[in-house]
Amino acid sequence: MAELKKFRLEVISPERVFYTGDVEMVELTTIEGEIGVYADHIPLTSIVAPGVLTITESSGEKGIKEAAVLEGFLEILPDKVTILAQSCEWPDEIDMNRALEAKARAERRIKSTDANINMTRAEQALRKSLVRINLAEQARKL
Image (cartoon, rainbow, N blue to C red; front, side, top):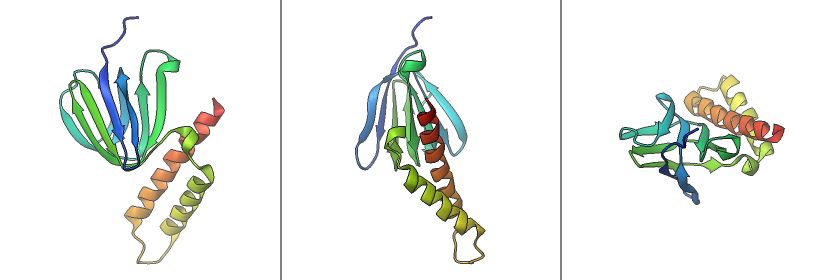
């Protein structure tokens, strides 16, 4: 199988440079839906939604990495993709107890009859916690 053309990926969060490297493909969730990016993609900017970031460094299972990305901005250029993320975590960095507590808290808020609860924020918190929980559980099964 022929190797795909690579491009530069940078994922930056407020705490650190999360990832920098040459990759074949990147997949992630934007507010418009799922997107996959190869080298020479048309220029694009988008808002990143909570989801799993899949980084394909090379063909084959060993060349694939996954991380939880919990909001941010995406810039795609033909030879470089930059993700400015509010938060990024590799599966082994996810605190499962904290994620489960966040899920329970969000579910309580959604079920609440309190008119002061911001439902959009509660639903967003639930989505973020589910992304983290699902990714951590999936990684533990491997």
